[in-house]
Length: 333
Image (tube, rainbow, N blue to C red):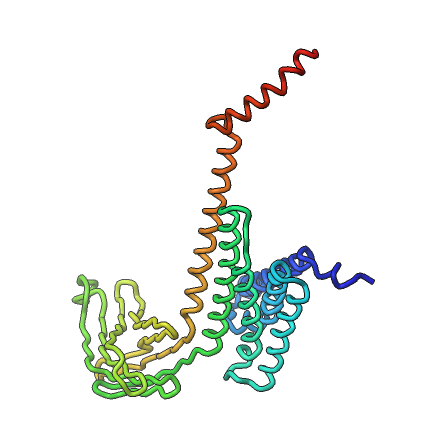
């Protein structure tokens, strides 16, 4: 029977990580191809929403996070330390699922595991060393990529499972309240009219309903906003111009579902998505890490070229040394 030291190696954990990645890619690929295959075989159109992919990729993604966290700890601290971090993440996930500190079971399960992975990434980043500047830069860049990936996962998990949405029909000078989100909206102005160049029998190419409103957060004025509901005669379709506020901890999205210009009422759709900063921040941090790895590769290439070239004092010294070594051999011949 093999010892655990022979099984839990960097090579075996990387193989496990790649295997889980292949499984995730297969699940996503099948989900993307299913609507196409159904359309080709039966002629019916279907749409697979995010819940379809979330339910099938959640466990493989968490397994991938645990494997990568162990791999990072294995390379920086040791095998026992890696097992402790992963074990605490799994134990925390079980305890969190039982006591449910969050309002969402996926978050209860995922948050402790992601916290363990975040600890492993930060520990690896702080303990990373290199023989020269380019090597240190490469290692730092790779760990920053890992950090961005973990933050990206945190943003995806929280924003997907904690987003709130609702709608309400609001008339001019009236207030619509969305208690679960902590927001209320007051319609301050409602205007309608033709816009654009004349088209067909119309004086304009589109009929535009413009709605101005005030947003209140927990009873206090938050911001002015505007949305538009546009009936485009030229293209034969209707579309909207929406209001989006991106804050540090959440994103607020407001759009008109339908309007009645005669009664000056609008059916407003409101969505609140928390922790979007983690998602976008994780993406930009990953980009930063990729740039650092690219720069380190360029520096290493430059050092190799200058070290192997024939120009410069070092190159001339190497050539002279090689010539001295070859002269005695020529005499012996």
